[in-house]
Image: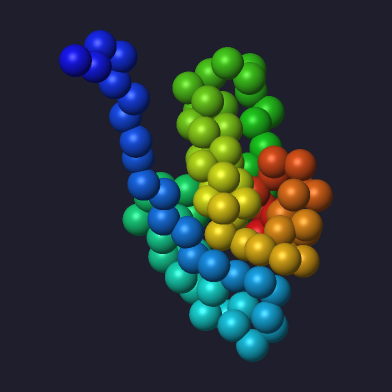
Length: 95
């Protein structure tokens, strides 16, 4: 009998390797997925938190950024991965 079960979740990624011919299609799909999951603004808008960092709005913006950045880091490969990694967790800069 297992007493300490581990749950698994699946992660959707849309592969991209910096092929310029596929960039338009990839960004459209990435934004569509972001809209579906609620993190599209993190990819398209500069949203700096000027209020107290612990506010609900600040927490929401940080969570959206983290979700978007994690999606990007899992979706890209090759040279594109290095660009995302060098954005240091900032989804808008990585996108």
